[in-house]
Length: 437
Ligand SMILES: [Zn+2]
Image 1 (cartoon, rainbow, N blue to C red):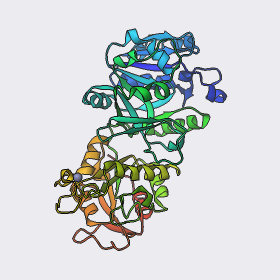
Image 2: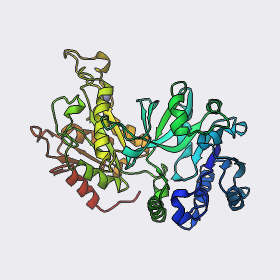
Image 3: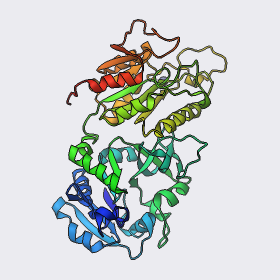
Image 4: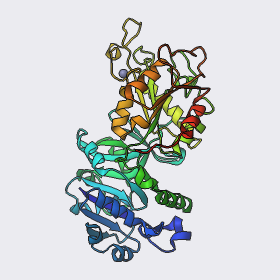
């Protein structure tokens, strides 16, 4: 696969630290940003990189040369006037005849490109696959919505409607594209891929979202640059690469994240516990993934549909997002094994592999995100959570008491430890000595 780096940007917002450098040459912990990007592309098996340059192109060419330092073949294309990401890419059309990768020139990233490429190749008629992830400021980010098959259904550019709820999934500036996408771009016209082109193209082309928990941050401000430098120095940038198995904290929803109600099916009734944002922030700042796994038989019962369950999750993600906190992934089981209820939906009345106490949702998350289950934890309020955690082989299952009317619903599956609420359970996990891989 060929890669394209959109390196035309000027480090304007970084002027205090970048002087007159193009963004790609801004030093990060003593090395130019583009050096990290080329190191990464070479490690991931990319052979040829097309650098789309503009501002101070000659400095970038002098710095990178022919790419032999990285074992890469570099080619430069310099735009005479700034045409935005879409315009720049259109100008490179003649060099892009096969599936290719696009990376923005202002991001620090280290991710498994082979896994992303496999994901793209196995999606039906995929025209584009966009790397997405939740971030700590979804309210002022361009958000993406996708269905259970990862097909993108909507782009929500900022500013967002304060009356609506949104999933916290941000377009993260790494794309796998098919050459036919370039045909839809207009030559010589200024346009932005994420804002102007993709939102309308998604109606005629199949776009997919590739959720990743790996490291990707842009350096749009001096503060963000400092944060990225700290992450480079601590080894976090490479540590989050998919090849390193990561531990997760799996969280049940009702009774753990929000007040338990019999059959919550309307987002208006969601009652989030006040400590959830804080608990999630503690997980987010650690190397643990925060993964929600919840049984939602309300779908099988016909009380709502999968869209209705997602609406509840959008509200949850929006509310914790305002506190800078996030879930790395959300899994729910819409099934229920017993038939015989009024208004039930027979297609969901199956004995599935995902409903807890089976371990299906945890195992699926482990496969997708390369989770190390033996270093992971399950936090829940019933025997089903403990059963699912044990079935998946997690290190410990932690119980929370805060479930009015449901305390003691553990039967023959007592948790390893009990806590008053999810934050205390998370504090306990964080207090344990870190165990290596
Ligand atoms: Zn299920």
